[in-house]
Amino acid sequence: MGAVPSAVKLGYFTMPLHPVGRDWRQTLEEDREAILLADRLGFEEAFIGEHVTDLAETVTSCLIFIATLARDTKRIRLGSGTVNLANRHPAATAAEIAMVDTLLEGRFILGVGPGGLRSDAEMFQNLDADRNAIFLESIEHMIALWTRDPPYRLSGKRWQLTTERTWIADLGQGGMLRPFQKPHPPIVITAILPNSNGITAAAERGWNPISANFVHPWVVQTHWPKYVEGCARAGRAPRSEDWRVAKSIFVAEDDATVKRVTRTPGNLFAHYFRNLQRKAQAGRGNSFLKHDQALPDEALTDDYLIGELLIAGTVDEVVDKLLAYRARIGPFGRLLYCGHDWADPAAMRRSMELMAEKVLPRVNRALGEPG
Image (cartoon, rainbow, N blue to C red; front, side, top):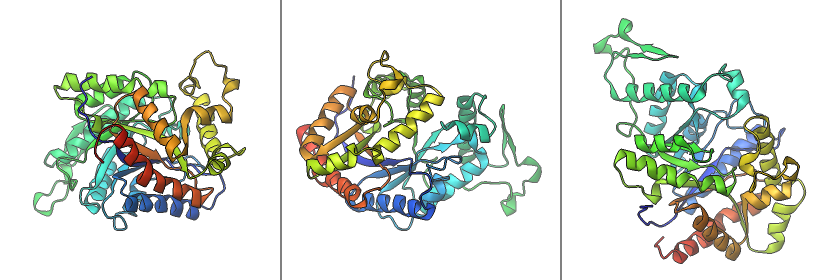
């Protein structure tokens, strides 16, 4: 479907999910340490999620979290994964993004979405609203604030943004600072639904997709064609390097470690996928977690979810599984290794090292591509 071949590049994605009750200081430091390690290992980018009303997902503002990394990272690009625009005021968010992009001197990628956590939507009084419409209005306001001269006069269904009455030109009162990148940072959106028209609309606007790690591969397989469709509408060629696919991966040097970390009852991956499965069941349902829609919900055991949604094994096994996964779902050019709770810090660090130093180079050699 018209992809331009490129080496698969390695990134990182985390919407940090930890056991409820862990020391918040510890989880924040752990999540920072993972990204600092990714920077040292040559990961090209890292995306961080946010939720406000969740005791397990402990980054409440991805922008604040990213700001803490601005001076401690050297080369890695940092992205919001995502800023949940239905839960925020667009002027405040535009100002914060401009500041973070400036702190990073352009190493920022703007991931945006409406926000998927139902309790956040309830807290911010939009649970029963059209959150996609709120999201679109918000991002359009933000882009206008970054590209138009003050004083501002922006009208929408939800927000009326103006500084006309208080504009003092020579003092700069009523104007907003702009991002380091012009006209704004590159924009990405997360994709969860199969055959998503949102991907097509985003690609038509010049935005790029991140396919989620917590849906079944058959869902992700539908995303590339929708991206190609949007590129065609915009008159631009689709590029593999613009399609990011997030994936939960664990790599170890021996089978015993793989089994201990991924198959012990109540392990960190079982906790992660069970948490998300229960949230899905309370909202859109379990269908996107199943390989067959006829599968009863009772069959979604921990072993099933890990077997279907996690790529795990030794270096040789993970190389083979990733090649098979890419052959199945399409020619993604950026693989986002997903962060998880460090219940076993040594094993989780070593998994990242093996991924960067052993697995990815072999994947690219097998694809006949450099890198």
